Image (cartoon, rainbow, N blue to C red; front, side):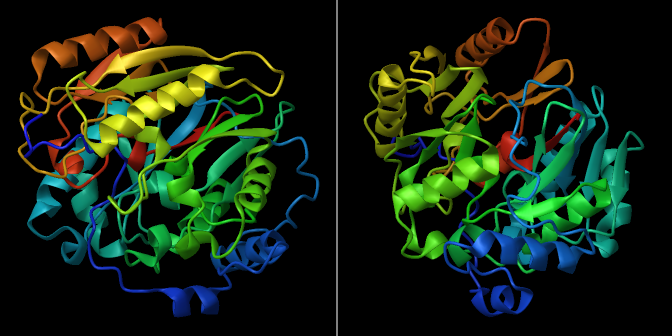
Length: 395
């Protein structure tokens, strides 16, 4: 592999100015409060958003995060406008966000949260098919991580859980983004609780039937979860997602701001069915080895009922053949986003790999249109299409 194109397939975020927001979080009531922290967190966050807090666990036993193949009411996104975070990359990233939003809007409604001063620009860029609102301020575009995780109960109920976003362990400014989950839930008019751990939506995948997967490097991490043990974090994850089992991967420590989010490498396709991005045989860097480790772990894992998982691979690109020469570029086909009737994925300029990825996505999601987008500015910033979207499922 060309040394200028490392296999950086972790769903990283641009490693910019971490301003240390612990004081803000404490004032907002968003710091962890021990093993019973979920109730206090849920009340404080919902109160800050003007929403209706519900004690964690109260009347929520039947709620679970569904697989993202279910139909959606809408997609939530966020408009980046911070030159302090993005610098000269900002215009390109904004163009990528607008392209993603306009593409999804062909299939389902999109709501774009923007700072009030940026509403006009966002509307102009995204077009009339995208609803831009200025009542939910944001720091950045990573709605997968800052937004709420919606849950359904199979009987027409919908609620939302927040994962207490703290800027990937106080590594980036997030005073506004820390409140996005509760404010989105309030805007959607659904009950909101906060999970009993700190994490991000891109850090956890669910098959919608009791099984989760995640990396230890992202969640069993002191800047997010203090001294909590893996078992304690796992219990809180399962409670939040309505799950009973977690497949853990070691992950990659200290190489990107997220600590190696799972959603750029491994995704659930259906109950006990997963897709893993595969590196080239010649790739031997830490990200390629992480992909191999994740596939191996899933190949020996079982679901909560004891069934072996069904696995597919999606071949990653050749970093010598892609358009971008950015050393931190994320070339993840697996970081796709499902919307009603379509799967939205990236293409990177390696024409053979792009075509193969399209064929794989068409095979594993039959009946859906496959849209491949050039989002190279976003990839150079460390993320992808799944990272900047959050689905609201139909109850």
